[in-house]
Image (cartoon, rainbow, N blue to C red; front, side, top):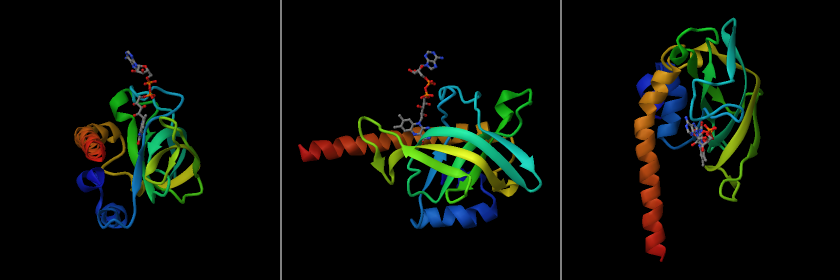
Length: 173
Ligand SMILES: Cc1cc2nc3c(=O)[nH]c(=O)nc-3n(C[C@H](O)[C@H](O)[C@H](O)COP(=O)(O)OP(=O)(O)OC[C@H]3O[C@@H](n4cnc5c(N)ncnc54)[C@H](O)[C@@H]3O)c2cc1C
């Protein structure tokens, strides 16, 4: 939601943000890849090639939390593989999860539990996934700027969730 509030176009806000805010749909965020170090996202293998008014995207992601049941993903792709500034080579892009090129392979077991729905972490293959170029929040090459801006509140959300879980565990005890 924060990505779309801060960087979404009017059309992206209408189609994706408003239904999220009203609780009609959920989404997921897909950056980490099995073949590259998630701790260093300047090395990403998912690539978008422009074809007319669309990007054609191929790539492999995993540990994308809450993909199962989500209406769309915001994911990180390389849009300028030959760029000299490695922090401007990637973009965020919005993909509807019913796109035929969006393939949820499996929910990965975390601490012995695959989970389902919101409580799950998926492996996804993007295979010739065609997405309109208008689905990029802000601009092409701004992937890192957006991700960096999202990290702060993202970390606070993680802390808030764990504090909530701990409080509930103490109450149950
Ligand atoms: C429950 C769960 C939910 C997640 N949800 C999401 C999600 O919704 N979306 C998403 O995109 N990703 C998600 N992730 C992925 C997460 O962001 C990555 O696991 C994380 O960024 C680490 O990347 P990696 O797994 O590729 O490990 P690597 O980067 O391959 O690291 C492997 C090991 O090497 C160590 N290491 C790495 N770099 C260095 C270094 N420079 N010096 C010393 N040691 C180093 C690490 O500490 C680690 O022990 C999730 C992960 C989990 C477990």
